[in-house]
Amino acid sequence: MTKFAFLHITKSSIGEHFSSSCAASTVILDSPLKKLQEQQTPTLLSQAQPTESHFFSLRLDDPRSYVSALVQCRSHFQIRKVHSLAITSAMIENLGVANKLVYVYAQQHAMDDAYALFSRMKERDNVSWSIMIGGYLKLGDFIKCFESFRDFVRSGSQMDNYTVPFALRACRDTGSLRLGQEIHHLVYKFGLSSDVFVSAAVVDMYAKCGQVKDARKVFDMMPKRDMVTWTVMISCYAECGRPEESLALFDLMEEDGIVPDKVTMVTVAFACGKLGAMHRAKMVHDYIRKRKFSLDVILGTSMIDMFAKCGSVDAAREIFDKMKERNVISWSSMVSAYGIHGRGKEALLLFPQMLNSGIWPNRISFVSALSACSHAGLVEEGRQIFYSMQKEYFVEPDVKHYTCLVDLLGRAGRLDEALDLIKKMKVEKDEGLWGALLGACRIHGNMSLAERAAKGLLELAPRNSGYYVLLSNIYANAGKWEEVALVREMMSYRRVKKAPGWTWIEIDNKTYQFRVGDKSHPQSKEIYEKLAVLSEKLELAGYIPDTNFVLHDIDEELKAEFLYTHSEKVAIAFALIATPEGSTIRMTKNLRICGDCHTFTKMISKIMLREIVVRDANRFHHFKEGSCSCGDYW
Image 1: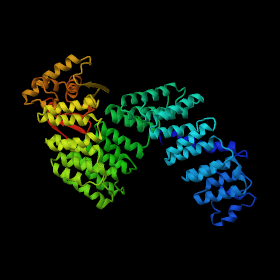
Image 2: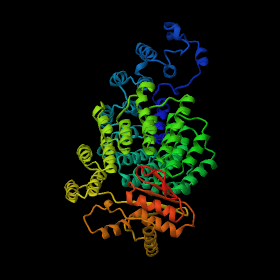
Image 3: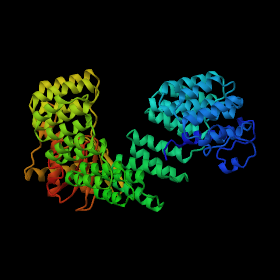
Image 4: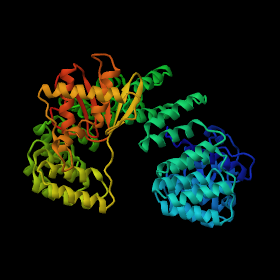
């Protein structure tokens, strides 16, 4: 099921590898109990433990019988009993039996017992080392995992596709890029770069360590790529914020004749959600129906998330209703989908339905519900949910739940109550919490509290440019240009650069990208002419540019001109040229939409009779007939 299936293949293949290590020619891993009982040789274990004879029977002179018996073990006591008999009969000297004992100990998370036996083994092979390395990895003991791999390399054993993927996965899980690079060097040294399991593990390691170029380089050099490797690389691009390349790679995968499975489609759905491209979301949905994939919990939930992030909460609900089985994550995703689209009341209606279906809410469920209340401005409902968490559902609120409530109270102007809540918190505060308070201070112009929030915030997240910009906005709104300059100096001193604003727009199944003042499009002349016409129409209708959102102490006229070049306005002008009258315009913005652009878009929706759907960094805005679904509450 996992996209790291090659690791599971490696682990499951260990059983097959035992056969070459046993004295007997064959190791029977799953011999039926009936066949063992038909053997004429007396079975000591059955006599010693008559109450457990139904688990397994054991021939003391046959290593295959030990391995088969160990497969039947269901408790640590049973494993130790077989271990004791193996010592008594000297069968512990058989490498296959010893390896299997180490393996079953590892499966029981009894790594101390596994190591005690492993350290006494007179003979070890790669399977022995793989079991230990993989066992520590599974237990999450990364230090011992790395130490075991180091000892394996020093032992002079030949590296193979059993041991290397485990070590690379440990590098991936701990972000140990340098060690991963060293292991990659060993992969080349030992001629394993052509092995699909090993190369896929290298790609995955680089991907999770954020080294996309290195991951793609290894991927391109692979002589043969299976479905798992393609999925890993597609996921790499999606998780690193490059969804367009992720989807382009999926197209190449199909051209290469590789048939994706459900795991691949979950990854592709994730990439679609990141991009926010509805036409790609529909294509993914059509492909899933064509392949007749069942909407199980994982695929169905990923489809809900995809459609919600592509702007259609109704399509997300349609998927939700078609799912035969739902878990708490499925329900929480649907609640969250309604929430980011400003349909908080519908989100809250799902909560009792979830309870009636036998699903008990967890931490994620409450984050989704509280966030929905925040987006919709449902203050009392949000407070009621928050204070019922522990009392009625036995869920202790964590910092994310407090952040949601602070955001809700702050947006509603109840800043004193929000601050009082922060003071009484017993959990550790994080940047998200202070960021919510700072955002509320921007909305309501509370300078003193904003400075207090900013102080805590910039200590926790000194590299996040968004918080500096937020603080600058607050100072600019108050006309405190000296303070704005000081914030800019602080950013310069700390080498923090403001993230550039981008807007993506989907037209005729194609995605276009615009930045502030963008003139790279072939129709730029027409776009800016259209923008000038729109500006005149809006000003006649009463639109006044809100120059408080320009963080430069310059002439008001220049500020207004600068505002007209914001990326979302350029994208809207292009859409009005390139799309039929009355059609819906869909856009995605990487930053939070500014107040001026929000007002501009509301008025455009009324004057041009268009519905405009904008997904910004926080939520969705559905503009129609001069109003926004957020109720000017974002």
